[in-house]
Structure formats: C-alpha cells, structure tokens
Length: 165
Image 1 (cartoon, rainbow, N blue to C red):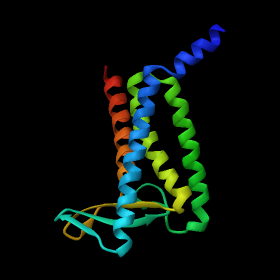
Image 2 (cartoon, helix red, strand yellow; image 1 turned 90 degrees about the horizontal axis):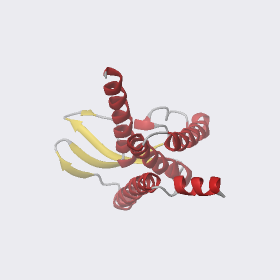
Image 3 (tube, rainbow, N blue to C red; image 1 turned 135 degrees about the vertical axis):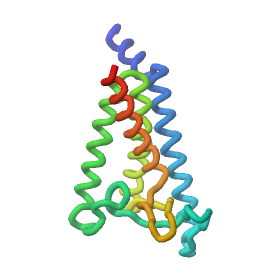
C-alpha cells in the first residue's frame, strides 16, 4: 500500500500538474493558431503584418523549419516515428529531472505533441510565421516550433551556466 501511495503522490504532485498545464497550454495555443491560419488561408491570401512579418500558410512534410521535406514518401513515416520516439524519451526525462528542468522539457513536449498531432491529422505540419528582411526569408515556422526552440535554448543555457559553476 505504501508503494502505491508514493506513486500516486509523485503522479499527482504539484510539479507534475504544473508540467501538464504547460504542455496542455502550449498544445492548445498551437492548435488555435493553426486552425485560425488554416481557416483564413483557405482563400490563399497571406496576412501582411509589417515589413518584416507575414502569416502565410506552408504545409511542411519534413521536420523543423522544413528540413528533410524533399521526398515525402521516403522520409515521412520514418520522421514521424522518430518524433514519436523523442516524445516518449522526453516524457521519461520529465519523470527523472528536477522541477525547473521539468518545465523546460514541458515546453519542448508541448510543441512536439502539437506538431505530431498535425503530422498524424494532416500528414503535414502547418507553418505560417514568415520573418523576412527585404527578399531574405527565414524558415517559416509555427507556435509549436517557437516553444520547442525556446525549451532547447533554455536547457542548453542552463547546462552551460551550471557547468561554469
């Protein structure tokens, strides 16, 4: 009985609930923005925000920032399986790390589940944020990509700072 209570306390701890809230918030924010852009761009019109930012729907069959999207048949299912494996690994890491790292991994997990959902639902990920300076355009990305990138940058920064100490 005591082992069962210990497991229940760990599963329903404030840290776990906070991580789940972060993951859920990112997933929902990602879904809402993607649905909005898909609905708006069914007329094939981009949204001009300013001289440096447009919202224009691009269907990405590759991985982050459109990498490996050349041959859908060859890479698509392999990439999807790899993403699923990474998600499982991140879930495992969340169970093993301290609270601060749980939140950082939750940022990545929230974005990764959003993009995996799209891959399974649409067989592509809707990317729509287009930063550019004149004719130079950065890779088109979405809200999930922002949180994945932010989580990775923060984890690397945390590790670099802790190694210096």
